[in-house]
Image 1 (cartoon, rainbow, N blue to C red):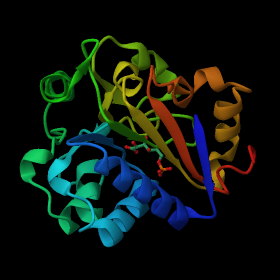
Image 2 (image 1 turned 90 degrees about the vertical axis):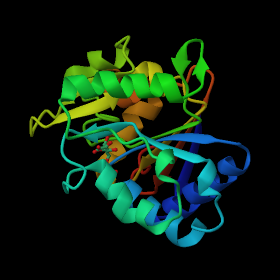
Image 3 (image 1 turned 45 degrees about the vertical axis):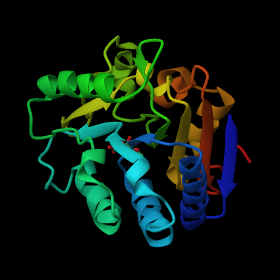
Image 4 (image 1 turned 45 degrees about the horizontal axis):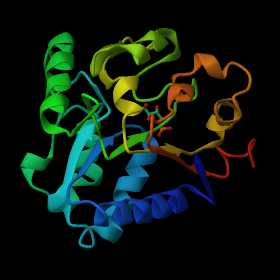
Length: 237
Ligand code: 6PG
């Protein structure tokens, strides 16, 4: 596990973008699972503004690690957030974008998207393998859309499952632990003081870390990198 502690969110965005651009150079095709949340917005803006022409987007294939079960035009949609902050600013072929169809029935879409992963990603030991999975971590220790109160979803034998947000009841499609831990690289993007306690517990394996889905991220043979600002890393520095 590698931990990068940066001064602030902008520095997280800069450092991650440089890492992403470098990773892209090493691959003929880069299959990436994107995350939602506020940190990726800053990262996507930075990527688009500073690497828009430096990266060959024709070799980048975007998927989502989780998506809210809402239409793609809904303000809650992770796809819409990605369009607003990145996809609308770069030149990437439509066929390189594998959107979760949030407007579909959640259970049907979880099955369909699981098959999309199966049919479009390289398989490693029979499991769809991303080159890079980008994850955030919630204040409660959730990651992707696997929440502590449904941590059993992590161990599903399915590629994707339907999750329910514990507060809003919003349905989401999320990739499961078998996909996340099969990735060649996993990048946690975690910023803000509200995360500092969970960061300490998850990284130091202390407190109730076992009850946080973020603690289950442990790539089978891949690399795990945490990109954090000082606020989030305060209790591990
Ligand atoms: C989502 C995300 C979610 C997010 C965390 C952290 O769809 O909301 O996938 O898992 O990564 O909630 O979000 P922040 O980046 O806002 O801290």
